[in-house]
Length: 390
Ligand SMILES: Cc1ncc(COP(=O)(O)O)c(C=O)c1O
Image 1: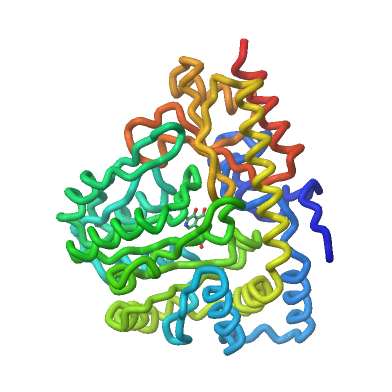
Image 2: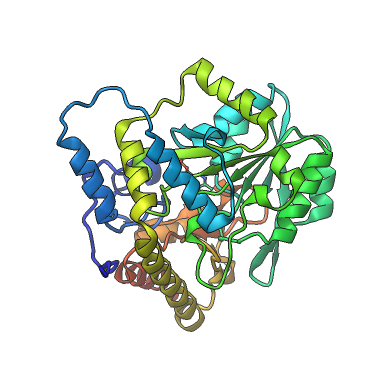
């Protein structure tokens, strides 16, 4: 059995990656330790690289089509991990989930329609509806004992005016793994109010030991009928740059409309490496995933221990899935601007600013990406401590 080395520091600067090479564009300086964009600093798995290298040996990179085996591997993964019984035609390649959300907005809503999200949330959930001329309706999550919870009365009230809900399952930021009961209640509310639900399950595979991911469509017949689920190998296998994702739509009515949109705009044809990389990832990735989850879980424990002992002014929402804890810096009593200034100009660490995730209560929150070697995480925390503790 191969042992993956997640402690290895891989130099990524100069590899055209957003996380390391777009710092100046987003933060105004590039001498920052990048703990922001949600990809990991680990080497992408050897079996994915091998499959891509093998395909390159053919040396004709003409138009690509997904093979039957690509869809078969996806079906098996969904069945084995999430008890999702997808038929071949329920699945469709899409060139990224953010793009997929935009396609769903175009297919199922009109300009002026309202779109429901739970805040704070992954910023494109906020920007996509607004950039497409839709109204954004936010139902704020409640932070209860360091864990996000849904205010179902609020959700029920706001759903009445909306046409679509975009759900991060598990949630980004903070990594809440929604329970079957929570998902059933969301499905019930959305179904009764005629909302289509996008269940974005890009982080599902990285549900950490001790927690269980439930795929939205499996919780009830209502969930099955009203949902479009997005999955991807991007986070799981650190191959986001391949733009390889899938939609799963069990409802024939929703499926027909969505696939018609994809066909008529010719927006989901895909590239050869997206198909080859995803197939290899889901075919050979079980062992890598087990080892990665253990490593990420230890990073969560490391962060938790560090904050409690060395930086008690910072409180964390620790992830049950994935690698994106949500940090509350308000214990220092600094303004948002002061915190930002200390992070960038003293600590030289790039975190995601909480104010870009929506909701009004997160002035002094920042999201940290701990999908990195433990040494990098320790370096970031030490720098933050030095810049904030006087
Ligand atoms: C909830 C969520 N959805 C989608 C994405 C990005 O998906 P894609 O790269 O397929 O557009 C991210 C990336 O961080 C995410 O956190």
